[in-house]
Amino acid sequence: MNLLPALTVHPTAALLSAVAALAYAVLAWASARLSPAQTRALLAIAWLLHLLVLSVNLLDHPAHFGFAPALSVTAWLVFTVYLIESRMFPQMPARWPLAVLGALAIVLALVFPGNMHPALRSPWLQLHWALGIASYGLIGVAVVHAWMMQHAEKAMRLGKASESSIPLLTLERLTFRFVGAGFALLSATLLAGTWFTEQYLDRFVWDHKTLFTVLSWVTMGLLLWGRWRLGWRGRTAARTLYIGAGFLLLGYVGSRFVIEVLLDNR
Image 1: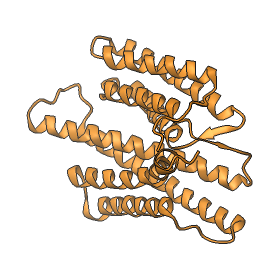
Image 2 (image 1 turned 120 degrees about the vertical axis):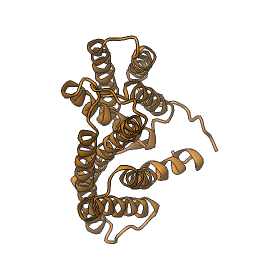
Image 3 (image 1 turned 30 degrees about the vertical axis):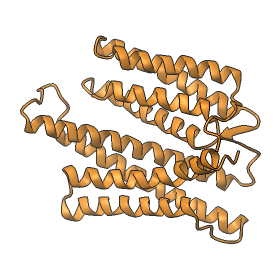
Image 4 (image 1 turned 45 degrees about the vertical axis):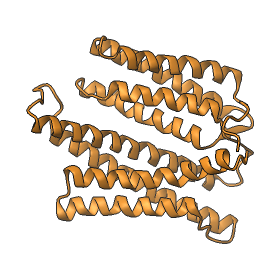
């Protein structure tokens, strides 16, 4: 088992990765000392550098992809939504934890660049991958909002809530909007994957990735149903979301981690 594979990353991507990770690290370290405008500017710079890293890696020939690049794309999508929301809600918290997450995701993708992927046989597989990564991103955003919602609720109970903080109901509404959007994309991901396997493999592939993805889909559907019919909120909703996101993480990222790192199959 080789936990430190030889790097096959494009030199430009490696340099950009180092600079982007450094930008995220500076943001995590100095966020408490910077003004909101300075923080947003530094976050935008880190976001742009992260985008350049992803672009260089995905446009490389042959392209590399795996569990760590998937996490890196997911982190970038989360930051994309956060960057937009921070314009509408300047008091949006969680800047430094997200910056730490971004730095770790970039470094992880640099160490584990994934496998080489030749030209895909079907546009359906490309659609399946795109929808899957998008669903990862939206559900990741929902998890971040649920975490902020729980912290806001705790601060309210302890009497430490600030009048300038985002209202708890707003965070709750945003959380479920992203859960609903993520569930819709996850449904489309499963449909595209089923179509591809039946058309090009003449059989439905039932493996660990499919099992965990279906478990995540069921959990997210249960969460939305519980919210609609039973009024789930607070801890119950957040814990159900965490479980569903955990299943989804085990689906592609978990299975690829086992294949690429534990089994050393590159």
